[in-house]
Amino acid sequence: MTGRAVSTPGTSQNWFSRLLRVREVSLVALLLIVTLGTAAINPLFLSFGSLRDLLLNVAIIALVVVGETIILLMKHVDLSVSSVVGLSAFLSGSLFVAFPGLPLPLAFVFGLLLGALLGSVNGLLVAYGKVPALVATLGTLYVFRGITYAVVHGGQINASNLPPAFLGFATGSVLGIPNLVLLVLMVMALFGIYLGSYRGGREYYALGSNAEAAVLAGINVKRRTMIGFALSGAIAGLAGVLYLARFGTVDANAGTGLELQVIAAAVVGGVSINGGVGTLFGAGIGALLLGVMGSALVTLRAPGFYQQAIQGALLLAAISFDMLAARSAARRAAKGRQS
Image (cartoon, one colour):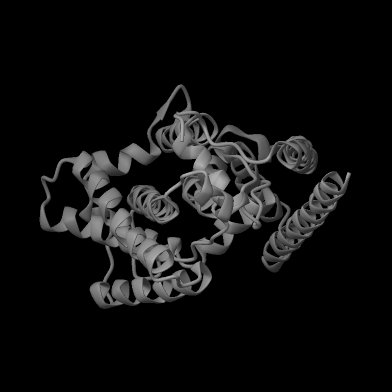
């Protein structure tokens, strides 16, 4: 195998790519409609403070979406990310309690390593244990959460236990843009370039598009799967540290339910559950769209259950769209072979 990026079959992939771009444009248009429509009813929705809080709330989800996108591209799913976020957040806080003078970068390194370790457990189960990712990560979702409850043992980490510089990192800003948001944008940009331009990143697309063809192309599927889950865990671990910095107070329930928001954001943003299709740009737009809709409903004082209903409706619509697109592409490919 040469050092060139791995690419999937041309005709179907090109058709999917064009369709995906149209979908991303539609999401941006919907985002503008929701934002401007809410602002027309309540101008405070576009105030600096409101936008800042919105971006901070979306940032954690958008960061975890990066790792989840890698997993979905491989035609897998990682349900354990919320538990990784929670365990990483609490243990990082415990480090500051045990070692008050702990350098801040070590907390971030700890979160990355812890998350990578937990993600590697998922990778071993899926790649070498041949356990379906849905089953494996559903199991580790509860195992990791159970470990969190055992470690927390009814306690919690408070902002008073954390260094002011650590708390100030999440709320600090550069040119009015929060540090947390800038960090997440940087991570998304780096992984976006990696997935789109480098051989290792393109292998995730190839693996999700056709695993058998990926093997014939010389891709080490087990190793690539292991790396994918380790990366997803490491990103979730980093998100846990940032979660701690953002909110200051953490208990055993930290991050609960985050996995559904992350998967919904990625799928709504155009990352196919059938694998091999999607971009981090679209996934990020999906996260932002769901965040804006949630904030809009709060601003308009709508009942809370509407937010979950809208997320569910968007997720169902996105999955239906993916299934129809996949069937259409399969029919086109079959006709092409016959001709």
